[in-house]
Length: 327
Ligand code: FES
Image 1 (tube, helix red, strand yellow):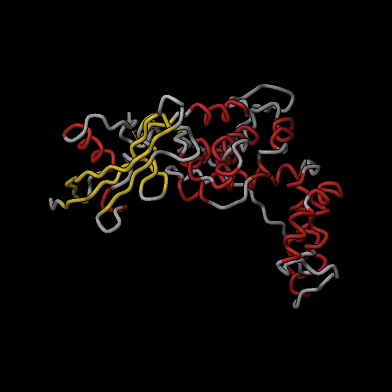
Image 2 (image 1 turned 30 degrees about the vertical axis):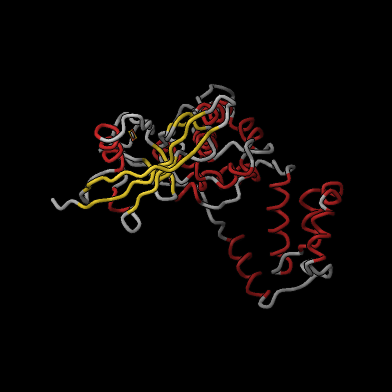
């Protein structure tokens, strides 16, 4: 098998006496074939070049989630990623997961990530909304989110987690969807009410990084969108996120265009909008303040026709599969 030489640029981290983290980059040379994984290369470095390099691993089969790390700019599982596929000009850059406290080198403290998961009560609870019947269709609804291995890749690449440490994060929200959708769960409505609170489902900015980085194709963002749909269907429309989405819907239906001038007030209320006056003045100075006069988009008839078609034939965002008997 043909071997090629690659440069591994690895971020070395260590905690100092003050509790901060000191970082530096260190380079290693590794010979790798087309089938060599990043994890094998790291083991080669640790076993033969530098025993002080610290990273986590366990199953080597993309099941335990412990080898998640930043590899060439994206958080991936080291045991599932081939060196040849991610090297750029023969160089592979490796750093610990982002949005998590670093312990040493590539090992992070996964505790804060699991605290978020524990907050959503990650187990089924019997209650008044429980039903006994579990159909193939209801199983398909939750099946893809149960593939999650809690590796933290989505949380590490989440742009919202980067700016808002209170955000529940894609993994915890996808797991919530699993319980909200399971027919055996007895407290779906109260779960949805909790998820409608700030820093939960409505805080996702739909950057789709979680969909890109998930090594198990869980697509957390899709689960978050379904959670929002269910909240609105339940009348949980009091929060800023729901009001913002409904204001969008109303404007586009009415005029085919957003009325940005009133959007803030309809989203945050009068007091919330007043508290954003500083940003409004900044926009005004830059000549970016939207017109206060309502505006109708060209082709409004087409927009209305789309709405009429959607009302006659609503798009069903739920996963539905025919209920088939086991073979
Ligand atoms: S070592 Fe278990 S997922 Fe990579």
